[in-house]
Image 1 (spheres, helix red, strand yellow):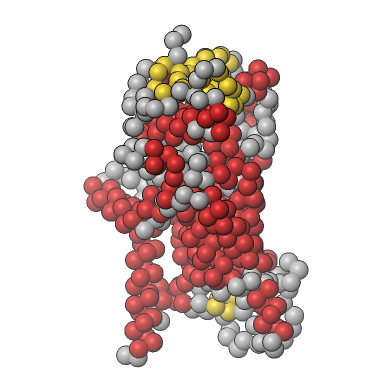
Image 2 (cartoon, chains in turn brown, red):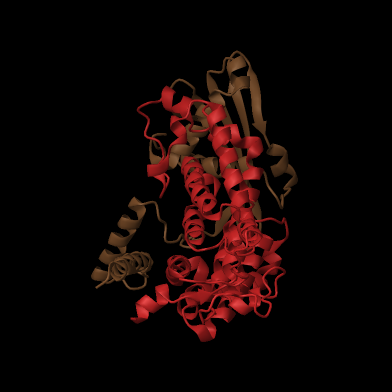
Length: 195
Length: 313
């Protein structure tokens, strides 16, 4: 067998293995919870993950049975030291219910980072900021503790006030909940806002 | 030659490859240009989760990034200038890839630098950034610069002419096709057990939540339309895993998927998800359809290669 043929067969086996891993990791284990399928899927996922390959993602899993969803969330973020210095404020957006067709990437990032942790904290699932679902709140509050405006104001705390507007899926009505709290810039702890 | 060997190595002609290259490059150019005003806040040493935070809280368990945590390098960068240089390199490689200049190295650099940036802020991209580098890598490993590119123009000037539709061994294109099918399987099949999908509510969830929805309409009043849209997506994505592999259904399924992604893009902002998926689904359209594009029309006798390679689709 020629060297070129051997190389080609070696390449082919690699291609088959990689393609097989992609397909195995996307097996519908939720539909077919059969032991070997689940095991094969997990093994392929671990293998691909180790080299940074994501076979696919569920963007909207639709698993939630809740009858109310988040419609809009706005924030006022302040540095609190000797005085209070507002670092970010988009409460006006919740007042006018204005929706932007093209939105600012940092705003998208901020909502994605804060919405989950603040709702969890408000519902009483008090967790350490070191736990994974809370880490985005830790990282964003730490960033705001040290932005130049906060440094100038010698901020000791960063306060985050949030307005949550929920939508009732059954009748289309909306309701509002205010939530938030503050973070001691010297400690990774969160103090809930008193209601 | 075995069927599998044929599938990966038998030469094909497919001009869609060049269109996909341009589309993937432009996606990164557009996405990263929009991040320019926030580069230091998102990726800089003083930014969210940056070098300064890592210094202040050395023992704090930082968030994993669901896929790219092994590539989180920006947390080690203490100079904002380095972040700007990497961003410029990323933007330049994306532009070169789109134009088809130094195509393969540009694609490899684009894929690698994108991973470095995506690993640092996984929440920013809503997930699309995790698939993007693989798709770019496949296209870069295919001969995507052989036509519709500056590389091809330079080769022509030197007297070497591949034609607008050169034949090539399609193994990298096949990997992309397999990955797209895996993507639809991962996203589509679990939905058949999900309550909101089965009740026709998921599109309402997406458009009425202003983290995603683009328009402040009375979506509740449009519910019949949204129920139809939900069931269309619920059918199409799992069906794609069965219809894309077969020649008879492939092109129609790809068109229906492109319509699905355009519809989603019209009503929601999910980062570059839809543009990336449309670019990837182009891999399933017939070669002849791309021949209608300027610069990809075949002239008689323009293709010097003797291979009687079939076209895809």
